[in-house]
Image (cartoon, rainbow, N blue to C red; front, side):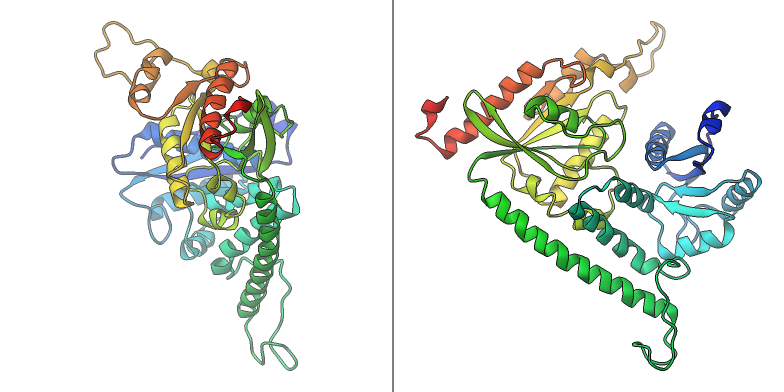
Length: 406
């Protein structure tokens, strides 16, 4: 069992007394590196912070697989429940999606609310959604998540009691009415989104045959900041997860060569399938792109795993075969800890310098790449040159008689 407690400054709690207090719970699988488990919880805490929740403690338990009934072991669940009751905890957050039965069983034992990773991400998306289109997409994902979890949870929907004159007939249970209400709202949202999808498809077709470049990557790697630098736009960028939900498309011109650059929602480990499905039209910008700029936060300890998550998500949405330009961002934040001379243990990620990393698998891969700092504007001119060359090559193949333009 691995367990870590986070000590928070009393001043920070005094400054924001209205924030909910939470504990994090995760299962460390057999064979999983405890450091990796800690980094996963770091990400979960970042998600909680984005939702304006302060995390005060972490609970982890090493198991072969999470319990199908209560996620953790019975003793651990009792320990968590007792600690939450003694310390006035508002919410317990689990680092996996809980099944409906797990949710019900855990709720019976807990003195406070519970959230799973999917519910937390959905809540963040609901907070971040600005346009009517994004709000409808998130609402659809939310209803599809809640539908199998209605029992005992759906208290804000109108109730329709069974009896004479009710649509469901005599004796209809509230849960059946709630399910019908939710299914109706899901159908209505899908109908609304289909109308917007058709409008967006027309908009995309009206753009002509301009070369399309899409920024993709893990959430909070600097895509929107890079978008602002390349397109000289003012896309919202913040050091929080999922700062951008709506797709932003800008026309960019390099030396009389025009192309379209789009910034899309960031991906994340265990991205809820409901969100992938409801955001499928937003991700059409990725599917229809001619070139993907895959932005990577090279300062993150798990950047290689994040690359894998993005590649898998791209494959899931049908964009795994697109040409990719790897953009390793945040080189200004990259750190290296030098090993002592008498330390004979194999070097880890923390002991590798940036130059050594550049000469590793990154140099041997066939994918073109560049190392930049969007914040410090390091290598941005070189990025523009490389991007111009790639767009020019695509453009020349599409318009072989227009090469005189460049």
